[in-house]
Length: 255
Image (cartoon, rainbow, N blue to C red; front, side):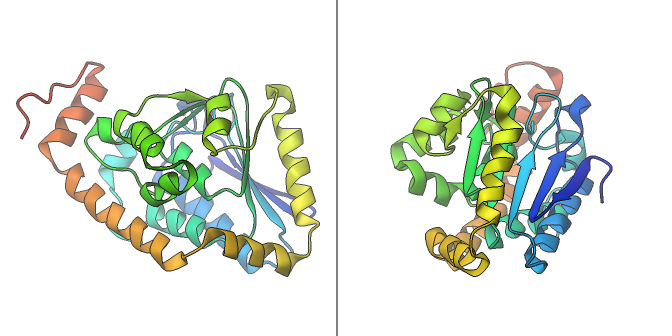
């Protein structure tokens, strides 16, 4: 397990907490591996009735740790990132999230695999993939249009603007806006209610709600292929260089 991922249990509820607040819970390969292991453990244990994802330090997840990510990009399914994404897609146990503060990139696409999500008004979700010269992941190009329709999904993906917790509820990504001080209590209470449901019925209901599993996994694989191709492009080099240099990227001479 990563030192930056805390996994705890309370009865039939497993909590996975991102515990790297000094970096706004930006994910490293080790953190991806730890979360994938926790999800696999929950799947294998029929005594686990729900899994909850939390951030820490007033932030859910600021996305990937850029330096760590570029040092070992996810070029196949059998990588820490791949294992985590497919773990989300294949999960049969109910997944929940409590989101406060930033939820950037994978911090937002993770929520598309959650069955229920509570957010605070100060939550700030964002999908900056295209702005970085790459494309979204986690099956989000399939799941987002399914949730909110093509036009609104295209706006989120192609422009990458941030949106708050209330907008996340309006778009169908989250269930309710709650006060920051009540976020964890209410999310865990919801998880306990789900965990107390008949275990087979709840997992079968989730499977039916999710729909075509093969289509979702195929979309994740295609996203990963395009993602890796774009990652080596001149566009991505300019975008990431500008990000590291804290300047506006210039794509006028890229092509």
